[in-house]
Structure formats: structure tokens, C-alpha cells
Length: 101
Length: 167
Image 1 (cartoon, each protein chain N blue to C red):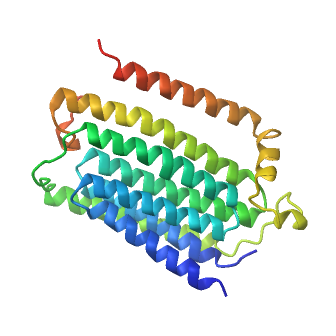
Image 2 (tube, each protein chain N blue to C red; image 1 turned 180 degrees about the vertical axis):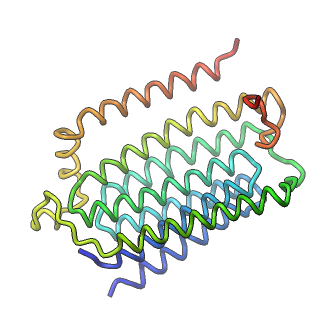
Image 3 (tube, each protein chain N blue to C red; image 1 turned 135 degrees about the horizontal axis):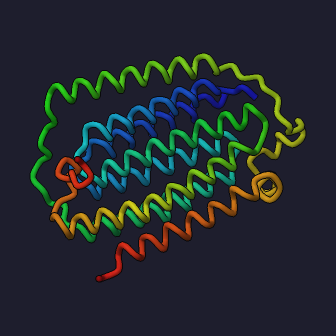
């Protein structure tokens, strides 16, 4: 059961940190969103690896939950981006300080 | 023995993720993200989780990425280059990220040689990831979260329609 588990986990860590790195360095809101999707994919990979190691279907179910949340997030997030673009003409995340006080 | 496909697909996944981050054109980023989704799906297949791999391709590569591409087409993203962040802020964020990487690596090393035995018997492990095992779980123990997911998706769709509605 333990075939190459550490390789998958290392890959998951690398992908997650790369997603976080992208969130830090990019300013385009859609690319930031894509980087969050990379992080979700890495988390899914870790979930499947641990599910196999634990020999239970809970991790697989959690992956389905994560996918559903990602879909909901895409729907709401992109609607917000389009609205912000109509209002301000840009989706540079440094320009948005609406909720800052 | 099957180390080579794992390494190959892993390198491909990392490369596509790098291309997503560093592409100048947002559409190219989105298309490389589709490639990344396919790489993750192949990794799921290598982990014997066929159903999750199919879901990954249909939901991520099919639905979500198509949605993002449509959203990009609605926006005009031909902008001049991105302004750089302040140096001190950037260094602070990178330090935080590296700290995070070290913590995650430690966590993975600590957990790596897992030999836990769950409730699944050994014969069942041959069918791990097939849809009937997942369905059994969903409709017995996972019933309430499953229904809550449907509520969440409905709420998300209603919210998106409300946001897109003209005043």
C-alpha cells in the first residue's frame, strides 16, 4: 500500500507552495484565482494519498466536496470579478481597497 | 517499477503550474491550467482512484476552466505590465512562504510512512476508488455533507445570478 507515497506527498507540497507563490507575486485577479485552483488540486492529491493509506473512502468523499466548493467559488468569484471590472475597469487586486478601513 | 510515470507526470504537473504562474497572457494561463488538471487526473489514476480522476477531468478541466475562459473573454485584459510590489513587503511574504514550506515538509516527513489500517478490508482495496465504494460511503455516512453540498451549490448559483442581474 505504501508505494511511492512520499513522492506523491512531496509533489503535493511542491504544487501547494507554488500556488501560494503565484498568489503572492501575481496581481491579475484571474491568475490569482487559477493559483488558488492549483492549491486546491494539490490538497486533493494529498487527500487521495491519505485516503489510500488509511484504506477508507472518506478522503475520496472529501475530494468530491472540495471540487464542489471549487465550483461554487468559481461561480461567485468570477461574477464578482466581472462586476468589479464593470465598475473600475481593471482587475488588478492592488486597486481594490473597498473593504479596507 | 511504476516510478517512471509518477516522476514524469509529476514533473509535467510542476511545469504546467509554473507556466500558469508566469504566462503573460491570461488566456494562456487558463489553458495551461487545463493541462495541470489533466496531470493531476493522471496522478489520481496512478493512485487507483478512477472515479476521482474522471471527476477531475469533467468538473475541473471541463466545467470550471471553461467558465474561467468565458469570464476572461468578457473582460478586456490587454493591460500594461503589472507594477511590482514594494520590496520589503515582497521579502516579508517570501519569508512567510518559505517558513510555510518548511512546516509543510516537516509535516509530510512526520506522516510519510503511514501504515494505518482503516475499516476497508483487503479485498476491498483492489476496488479502491471505484464508484460503488464511494457511493456506499456517500449514501450511508456521508449523506448529510452530500446534501449540504447541494445546498451550497444552489446558493452559489443563486448568488451568481443575483450578482449578474441588471439593476
